[in-house]
Amino acid sequence: VQLQASGGGLVQAGGSLRLSCAASGRTFSSYVMGWFRQAPGKEREFVAAISWSGTSTYYADSVEGRFTISRDYAKNMVYLQMNSLKPEDTAVYYCAARVPLATMTISSPYEYDYWGQGTLVTVSS
Image (cartoon, rainbow, N blue to C red):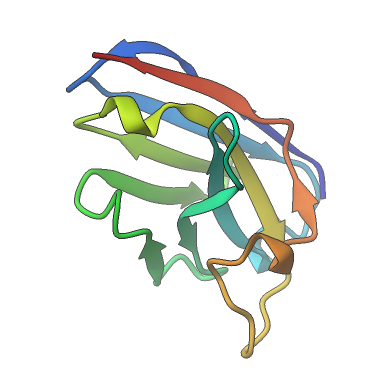
């Protein structure tokens, strides 16, 4: 599967952005989809994930209640709606995918096989 993230940009603190991830391939519906981010000088960290069925979502504590992940099977898209943005949300955001495993750690970037190219989100104070 190939992934392409978009939607990043510059926004003031308190503002909103919606990131999109376009996925190619007919097996999109069978993948766990995740969003990760990496700030300068920091390791890549988990942001959110959604199960292959779309019935389960997972969030990092730092974004819980502010970000929402969703997927559109008809369009092969995954979205990350980001509200109440903070300067500490500034990072390059990546979407990722993998075939689900019962034993996988959904928040670990090492569990994901496919990655998009990243989109930069900058939140000004």
